[in-house]
Length: 553
Image (cartoon, rainbow, N blue to C red):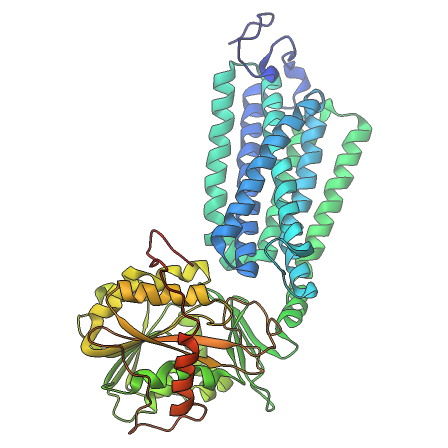
């Protein structure tokens, strides 16, 4: 314990100097000093949990809206950590008024952090997207929220240290240990509460608003309860009214969150949204599909199936791979059942295994009238067997040489979460599951729009031991994007989808249609051969393969 008039220990933080921090008299506290310290540490715990929830919410929302989760997490975390350092330095000027300063900071943090998700979603929905990598207001808004929340979170620690030392002075090491212990445990609780409690039960919008409510109540209770005698009457009333105003704003926003989300969803997806569900894996939205309108399927904001062009895409994906033995077929992804529909058009198929990560998607594909009609009620066919699993993990346990055809109907390689499904290790496992005469077909993203990604997939397949034939199919007017686009209006211009047909042995598999199979509605042999030549003209040589530890997309 530092004596009342001892000089400060060299190197100790300035707020621990006993000459600057007279001990608080017990009669100025409404509770005993030991209880007061405990209450401050509880507040540290709660504030740390709230701060980490804001951080994770920004990362999750930015990844959901913009894709490329590694980039979004790096931007948010680096900006926030930088801002926390600036906020900590700036808080030194508030140490003389630590109680009122802390109350004001918690009120502002609750408002900014609580409303951040709703603000980001509103700007995204009503400004038509995010533009270039740093272009436009929405991305600046993300950085602004990261900066603002980081400044406020960083300012908490010096002020809390000041308050806890004023209750009862102790050596700097002990005070820092107590404070950081409560802070780190609170961060652990907040980090676990976000994915396991707030996100599944409340969603991102209401979860952020609820966190802001907890934040302002905790900060206000500490200042107006424990340290009220440090405040002037005017300061007490100002903080109380500000806190009540923030609570009113957060409560009103929570009450209107449902209507707001529906309006924003219509702005993003169009006015004919029929189904919107949040599963354990992703958000699924079905729009149209009634009254003659084409059905659009969105997964986490990306248009995954565009009704006007889906048959062109799925025929191009499936039919060239079926020109050969195809009794046993494995579909990786494809939970919408549309690739299975094309496979089942071949009468001699004996078994189709679908590996889909999201059971909610396969449930909709079974039971939604429009989607089940579009997939030809594929899940009612006794030849179809569904496994809910990650595609990579499923391949690790699949028996060798078990399939004649493997169809990789997976998300675009430009999406960070999907890069493992376009890796050399993934294709090595797929090669092991194929019979010697088997074929693997991969959707590899747009050839024209992102040729480097497309030919990186090709290099990766070759590194895994495949020979391959590239081809592309041009889309038309559906807006069914070839890459990680975010809205139905993202691309109305003609575009293409790139595919790679691969064989585990021998020469490159020929691009042809099964002469004894069903006749495709949108694909001809002449068009397929021309599409192969068009894709080959975009070839980029010398690209390295993508692996799990060195993704190249």
